[in-house]
Length: 300
Figure 1: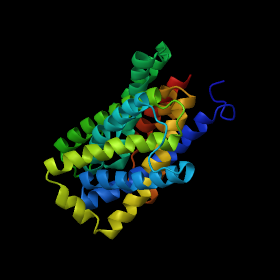
Figure 2 (figure 1 turned 45 degrees about the horizontal axis):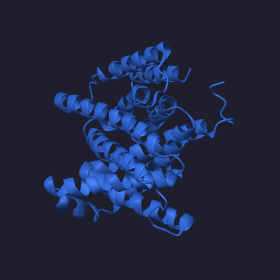
Figure 3 (figure 1 turned 135 degrees about the vertical axis):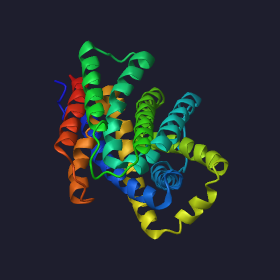
Figure 4 (figure 1 turned 45 degrees about the vertical axis):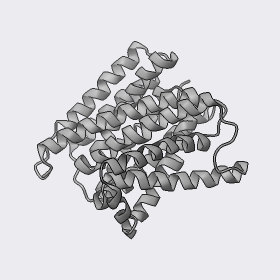
């Protein structure tokens, strides 16, 4: 039975990922609008790297995970570059342009992307029912993305760019999960996340001076409110959320783990209503449910 949670903890950790990523999405959106998405990307990874390093130090006596093979380093660093650098660069810019609700809805596509990559790269099954689920998920996303709220002052070209960046972010997450699964054998989930974060940090350290964003990063550290939300997001996102997801994909197929993690658009709706006082239309709610329902078909 596919929903036997007690028999396989992978399902529990995939669902835990959903709640962690919901909190991190809201926290990072607030921080990104205060200090910019580039600064948030680097600083939250630096915070996460420090926290993960202390966890590894406590467990093994080493700040960097010991006993990692060259094979594991290669795949996990590649996964971190794809997921934490390329994917999250697009993700955080999308937060600024179109907000956390629509961005996390687009991240539903990470499940079908992960299923496709898993099929071609590591032979995970892709049945006709899963293909139907992908089509339904895409339809739900398109339904919500086509909505234009009257009180939404976001320029149309910003929405278009934000949607494209959200799709890139979803692909980065799906591909990154498969790359992680290839290199994660025998490692603790926190160690896997730490190595992946290390690749993301390296990418941003190289890119930020080229983007002339070094001054903005330094200024961001002097914004106490932004740093509070950055820290909350780093704990909920890269540390707990990603580590839970990394563990989940070692126990269940990437497509299924991605499906359960794709529940963020549904979970986030009460938050944006209660916390952000954002009006959510019936169309948006229906579209979110349809998109996630399509992703759920991947589990069957």
